[in-house]
Amino acid sequence: MRNVSFMRAPEEEQAYKIGDRVEVYCDHLDKDDQRVRDWLRGTVVQIENKLLAVQFRQNIYLTDGWMVPDRILWFPFDSENIRPYQSRRKKSNPIDEIDLDSFNLY
Image (cartoon, rainbow, N blue to C red; front, side):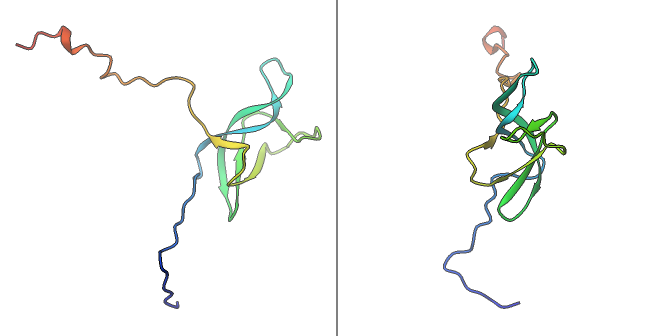
């Protein structure tokens, strides 16, 4: 291999890894079986040079109405239609719930 010099080493920055949970803005069915275009949670299952594949647990649809049979959509890394998943539930730290003032330590 040739030794190549750089002014600065290239950074291999990837926002997503396989197994990451993400939200995607796409057409799917809501709880009432009505077709909506909204954010849906999925999992990153494959990463290519400039694209990543997200798989879903429920049926998704293309804009023209066709259902996607394998439930996988491909997105470019810089797409506005994909974002990291953030849990709706606020995770509480059990240590923060302990009232230390209530203990008589002296």
